[in-house]
Image (cartoon, rainbow, N blue to C red; front, side, top):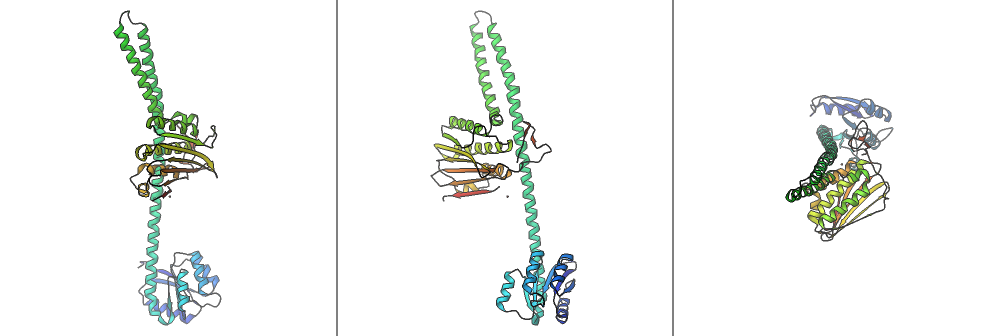
Length: 389
């Protein structure tokens, strides 16, 4: 029940019938104001100038019929309840009015039913309004989470880039300096100190091994090849690394030329999704071969990773605990793309990523640049699963 006055618009050409409607409403205990109109022009004008919270309408009008009034109301004020109050209305016509969006209908010979119909229509309207507000709040919360995800993805990538540079430059230079010092000591050791020479050589080998470890960690954090040579070279490098580490054959095929350049956002999204896909294959697929295909079609860049492993079920794809899959889909969605999964048990899985080349920016900055590299930057998740189960 509304605590303030409910504004009611009555579309009725007969003054005596209008008075009967007003009398029936006066028995409802509802605080209301009522305005009567007769013509199409007046009706449309009131819907614009002073939108009502409830519309009561006769079905038979001299200038236009009730269905036309209903259609106008649904177009201009779709959330306002509309009740027909009419003299005669056949069953088929009554059903038609409800199908077209009327809240209810009341015969003028049974105006005692008007008050319950009004209360019911206002209550349902309030519930719809509250549900719509809840959906808007949910959508707003989802957008806030999406914005947070964008920010966290950006911060994480920038932090990885910064750490990779510091590890490579600072630790790499320090270790190289130590190796040079050991080489200097080796050339200046006293004659006959074989044990000392062996020790220096062993320390030099250990430093070489540490330098390789530093390079590996730096590359895993942010491979320089991705920024320097582009996406295709980075995918081929990662495939070779995966094959050497796991023993799973990994072939890369592409219709893109080697010098094809994409912006930093798209490069990062594809590369990180590719990394996560290979990680999942190594952990769960029991595959022997992986085929990677990439190209561009209809303004979208695509990447398909096909394995010959055990396959993945729809339940596994939709499992909220599958953070890796969720992250893949979110990365693509941030750039207006999508990730799809096609799988049949025992016949492998194909993961396809499609992102528009002209994608929305993934974050908003004043310069629209990646501060880590100084390069231009670019860019509810959609997940499509097709399981053979």
